[in-house]
Length: 300
Image 1 (cartoon, rainbow, N blue to C red):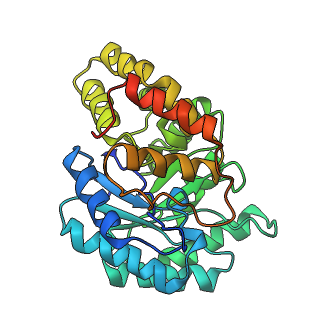
Image 2: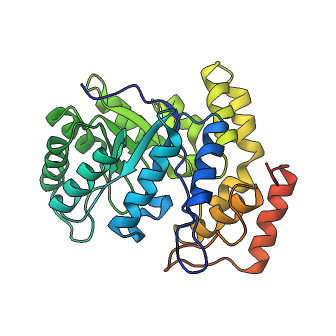
């Protein structure tokens, strides 16, 4: 039986990159320790990690580093999607070999195919590994609720879904209703912007970016304790920063990493995004710094 016990806050790691485009392993190690130290329940390596911009050798280095530093303390979810089934199977098997606890896979999107083909894609991958799989429902590669339930019915490893197609609040509610009795476990994503509303609609976890693990853990703890008002207050206090982080991939990667430097996790010079990625201008960096200062997050 696949592990259906995963719950809580699973931040998606940022990849520390220097000006030459090289991974800064020491900062990746520091980030893993920092996020675990903030109380996160798991770690993700996925789209916000820019995993699709790395070679297979670099992907292996990232995952093996995270597994080594984590040393079994929390669960690790690795994105292993590909535009071909054989590619995704190879990436998934490799992630299992390197110690991932779960996989996360979005549908293929380069060439549109019928839903039946997407279901077959997921089932073939599930048959190739022994790990639980998060179906990743994104705006550009959607897993509609009915498709998610159909996948879960065809293979026990297809037992999680990360709901990210907006508007996520009704999407989560519809998925919960259709998935009743299927064993499908619901998580939220999209930067955690609607985490509390998603918890109310059946989500048992959230996968935000790397920059605010402590805040999301507090939100989770408040909600689990039955104090929804405190959870909402925590979200509201950070709403401007959450909105800043919710910009599209590319520019968001620069913002994540700038914040990681300002919070003292990444060393200056490790905040570059893999090309192509739009870099914020100097004025926006100042606006981010102002938000961080107002929230007392500098160096913390």
